[in-house]
Length: 306
Image (tube, rainbow, N blue to C red; front, side, top):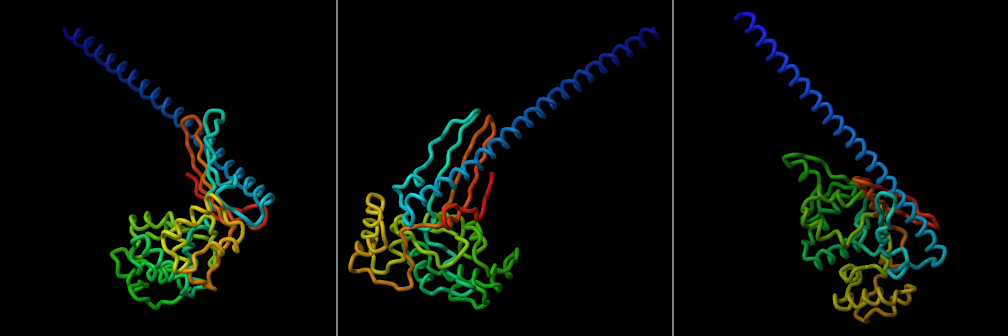
């Protein structure tokens, strides 16, 4: 009886060992499959990233060709301004866009060399009003960027930011990216989303506005006396019959517009935002690059890869 019991226990142990070995083998096989799949996904993502970055080189070549053929003029009817449709590549596809950045209001124009630009603040406040946003946002943004510690009316300097639950100090520097606005008093996600289609963040101040790309709200903000209806008409003309010179644009302005000698206008651009998106197998990648074209070939100002 005792021997039979021992044999039964041994059999149970053998069955348990076999079951454990089977479970371990299955687990290892599953982990091997996961590891192999992760390796394949990583390979696909890396290839997609390389393809997306290649789209940036394509954009530089397109912009160089444009400057060689049509120097001094940039408008929405040129080849570079048209969205690149999805192009099949082996195992995936790639697409890209080049978007002018000088038809927008450059937020860094608000402060030059650490000092407020009063004319640009007035323009920005008119833009805020046109968008239904509080005009005091202009003062808080100037306080964030200027070099002094004096608080503008309804503005915010270190005293305000250091009193927060998680304190920090003013940058006292130009903006590096529009995402930095989340740190500035009054600029919540909804405000930034409303503002984003009309503004840019360029690495210099005192940049000209390309009237061939300016939205009606921007035109109305920078040209006192221009109504929104007239601004929409000018934007419509720019899309169908682009302004080939600044004189051409000024000639088409209504007589109600007040001429501002401090305003810089242009029919050409130097800054462009390029977005490249690529898929490869199960991997996907996007590249966002701000290009500066001074001369023929554009250089990268900042880049974001995802």
